[in-house]
Image (tube, rainbow, N blue to C red):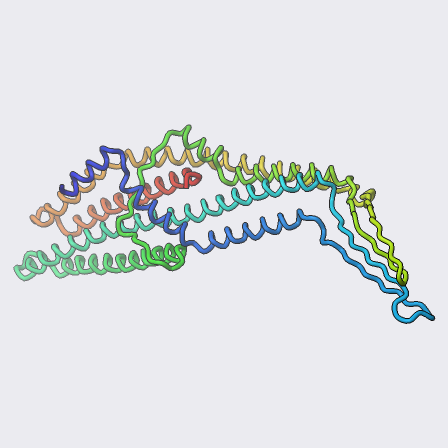
Length: 388
């Protein structure tokens, strides 16, 4: 089966080889990225700390020996073993707060993960643009080399001038310089992607733009309702609402129980102790503070939604414009024009100056198309970022 037949077969069964190429790069970066690993470890440590804070106080053991004049050794002693703990309903409320906090941290991690993978995806798309620009430069180089051979021969035969020959040489000089700059930019992006992959090599030779066209309704659902930043803010609001409930229970007393043993020479007394600490003053403003924080988080959530929706409207409008611009450009026409121009100059029906003047216009149009295409796919990837 040849390459074309294989591609047609893949398309027929609905598998996008292009999407798999970039997707495999992103999966590898997700697996190796040190920032994501550090975030996971930090979240685990934070959860352990939160769970540790919702435990009873440490048991207290006190021992006091007493000495009295006229008594050899210890006259009496006292030992107190006590345990202080919060009202039982507070532990249940705090356990729920820990679960909500864990969910909020998971949402925050997914937001960080999304941003890292989106950055990697956009870098891959920038690399695709540079690869396609390099293909045009290679084409220009090949054309210039053919013309150099032809005009060197014509110069010897008296049918060309040194000015024309020098024009071709300067074209080669320019395009070779652009190729070097292109390769430097390519290597920089490759190194940035490898740095995101813990400096491990990545296979980037076959990456292409993914085919992930979607309706406007689908874009809106992805970008607003499923936005990781909005979901993180919603999770933080749930945490703060639970903190308000906890603070309302702050008036509940702290309880303590204990065992006491007193000794007086050969006699010993054993007893129990029960106590309570009433937070009459310390909880006075805690509920107000918790409610104020809840209001702040709610306002932050509302603002996040507004910002996401506003950016979404702008991006959808821009995406439609870019799509229309891509529809206007006719790649086949531009390539056909270049072929005709080349045949004309090679046959001597067009001067070299006219050829380069017209050919430069076509090359600029092709480069403009590549930049619009890249912007379109990059914007579409940004709108799809919550699917990463």
